[in-house]
Image 1: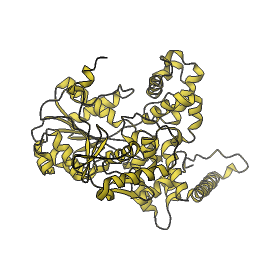
Image 2: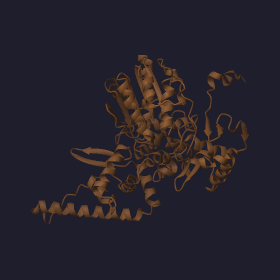
Image 3: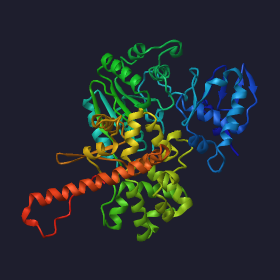
Amino acid sequence: MNHAIADSPTFAPRAPVIQVGECELDLGVRTLRRGGNVVDLGSRAFDVLATIALAGGRIVSKDELMEAVWPDTVVEENNIHVQLSAIRKALGTDRKLILTVPGRGYQLIAAAPEARIAPLPYHGCATGPDRLPARDTLLGRETAIAEVRSLIASARVVTLVGAGGIGKTRIAREIAHRLAAEQAVDVRLVELAAHSTRAAVVRAFADVCGLANAEEGADLRSVARGLASMRGVLVIDNAEHVVEHVAELVGLISHANPQVRILATSRFRLRVSHEVVYRVGPLALPEAGDCREAMLCSPAVGLFLRRLSSNGINADMSANMSDERLRVVEEICRRLEGIPLALELAAGRASVLGLEGICEGLDEPLLYLAGGYRTAQPRHRTLRAAIDWSFELLDAAEQTVFRRLSVFSRAFSPQAACGIAHDATLSDEAVMDCVGELVDKSLIEIQFEGAEVKYHLSAPARAYGREKLLAEGEICAIFERHARYVSERLSAISIEAVASNPRSSGRAAPAPRFTGA
C-alpha cells in the first residue's frame, strides 16, 4: 500500500489541542496530558471529555453525549456518571471545570485559548475556492443564491436567518466559493460554532485578519482595524449564540471599512445598522397530485433520494423506484416540510427502517431522526439536538410560550396564541412579545394571508415542544385549554354567522373557517 498521501503534511492538518485548566486534551493522539506527562484516561471517558470540550462552553445534553459516545449501543444513563467520575479524577485540581447543570447536561466552564478548531490560514490575500471549506451540491437554492448575491452587492451586512438545519451554512459557503472563483475577491470565513465567549470570538476574527499575537490581547477595535483594508466579503457562520459580540464587532468593522461586505448566518438577526435580513426557507415540495417527473424535479424529493442513494440503497433511485414508493417518499418530504436536515436524517434512517418504517415513525420524528454525519457539528447529528441548540438560547418566558404553542397542529392567530399561552404571570402583551422573539429566533414561522397574520410551528418543533410540555407536567392542562378555546371560537363563529343572516334560520349554515386548531 502506498502511504505517501496519508503521510504527507499537506493532507494532515493539525488536530486541535484543547486546554482544560492545567491539562491538555490532544484530539490528534487521543491523549490527556498534564505538564507533558500522559494522564491515564479510558477511551469512553476520553470521548465524553472531548465531546464536552468541543462544545466550546455550550451545555451538552445527556442525549447528545449518548449519541456521540455510544451511537449504536443502548446503554444506561449511569454510564455517563461513571465516565464523568473517571474524568474528574483524572483532572485532579481542575475537576470543577466540568460542571453538571441539573436537568440540562454538562459544561466545560473554562478553557484556554487553544480550545478551537484549527483556523483557515488567511493573511490578507485574495482567497481562492481551494482555501475555503468543502461544499456540497445544492438543490433548489439557485434563486436564494442569486437573491443573496444581489443583496451583497448593495448592502453592507446581509444575514441569512432561519431554523436549525434549514441550510444557511451551505448557501453561505456556496456563495463564498462562487465569489472567490468568479470575481477573485478576498473572501474570508469565520466559523463560530465552537466559540462561546467574547475572547474566543475575538480570537477567531483575529486569526482571519492575520493579526499578529492574536492571543496576547487582541480586542474588537484592533480586529476591526485589521480588516480596514479588506476589499471583499467576510462570511460569519453560526453567530446566534454569540450574537452580542458578533453584532458589536460587525458594527466596528462596517464603520472602519464601508467597502467590506459581511454575510452572516444565524438563527436570528444581528440587529445592527445597515443589516438586511434574508430568511432561508425549506426546500420546495411537489404540488399535490404531481406526476412522477414533477416529483423527481422537486428539490426536497431530490435531496432525500440523493441521501438515500449515498446510504447504499439502490444506485439509481430515480430510475428504479416504483411510483408507489415514490409517493411514500413524497409523503415523508411533505410531513418533514422540506427541512433539509430532517430529510437527510430520515434518508439515513430509511436505510435501516425502510421507507414505510420511516413514514410510520414520523408521528414521533425526534425518536427516529438521528445519525447525522460524524463530521457534522453535534447539533446537526440529531433533529432533537438541532432544536435543543435554539431552545437553550431562549429565556424562561420564551421557553414557556414556545412549548404551549406546540399544541397547534395548524397555523394560528395572535388571539389564539394569547388564549393558549397566557396565565397569571404571562399577560397577553407578554405572550406576544415572546411570540415576536420566537419568530425572530426562527422557532416560529410567520405567515401573511392578505392583511391577516398567522403563525406556524414546523412538525419537528411541535414534537419537541410537546416533549417539553410533558416534562413540565403541563401537557394535559394545555391540551384541555386548547380544546376549550377551539370549542368557544367555533361556537362564537356560528352565532356570528346566524346573527349576520337572520333569514338563514332553518337552513344549514356554511362551515366556519377556523385555522387556530
